[in-house]
Image 1 (tube, rainbow, N blue to C red):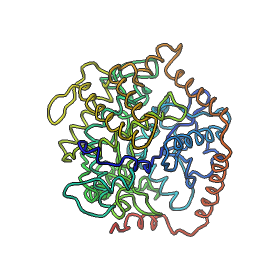
Image 2 (tube, rainbow, N blue to C red):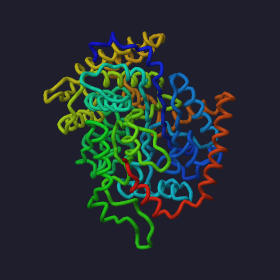
Image 3 (cartoon, rainbow, N blue to C red):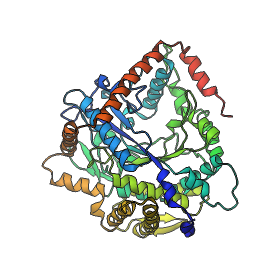
Image 4 (cartoon, helix red, strand yellow):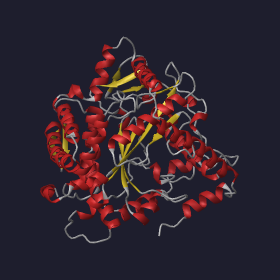
Length: 517
């Protein structure tokens, strides 16, 4: 559809929506991961829709609602980040990087949510993650960028040979986006990867592409995002797992099959210990759908007790969740607005480009390219593979950004902006032309100049952000909203604790046996 852009009404994209999820560890003034309970000033983590936790008690997760205005979305994230920092215990700050500081398994406390079955399920799921992958992998932080394209825009796209409801059209186009995304997403860690360094405790066996940086850290000489490498979110059980992205039905079928297929290593762990305490939800390849590690997910808002895959099958795809972005060390909120703007252009490119055939060959080729870039993305002369043939990294990147600029111009014109989308693409073109402008290169350059270790440098960055957030005057309207959410979360949690929700066994049985039809 790239040859038909003049036919599209890009002003309809004003109804696009975006939201951001940002993870961050709480640390003490020395940069040590803390085990203090979730701050009471942030309410109940099970029921607070803006500030919760991810895997561990100290791994904060900040969530914005969806916004049609990108500036408003980032404004909310700034207010939420400041509110969170101002609510932490004395001297605690938010760690500014994706990779955790030097930490042992014993120093990480799995999050608890209460005694009701829903809370128990969350905790047992996390116990299973710790058993399967270790705790340190689970406290790696990231940014999730959620994006939905205007229904009016999608409804008016001309799709040759396609007929169906708006729900079917949306799902078709989003899965079309995913296929191209897999092929091209290697460019994102090059442009935005901010984790070329990791603690040695996270890579105890070392790796051929790592070198000593200091006493406690490794560095990848040309690495862009160790978070997305084999040191980050990886699963032996999922290495041979093929989840089709041909369409929503195939995707849901394969995902549910993985949650119903036992895996030998997990069988050996057992589901319960000798005392009858749950060790994991089950011994299948995936305990639940969310355990599937992927750099992008098609999402539909699930109802109470509804499985995510069932929500997709019943109501189609509502938005895309981009999951490969590192926390931006140089931003107080973990992501720059420019990054969000470019991601939106990139996703539009993936949807409007010609459709790819989705198969295991494409997935393997894309996976190999992605692995090369996260480990060696800044290496001069790096070659990738496109459709079975070697392709120079820079040449292919220039092709991608050329098309991104074309789309950005239409988006700027249609939305009556001041060229913000084009500026975001131009900034990425400059990174491709000059590798020193990439965040990963900037990290290593600043660490070299800094008079101290990598840990001390990142702690200093974290402290600077914390100081700015503590001084930030949160708008009264936002503060009142967060205060009310804290109070509402406490009341909602108490109702769940007081309610008779049945036994935990009955609850999880009902969850897994719920029909998707």
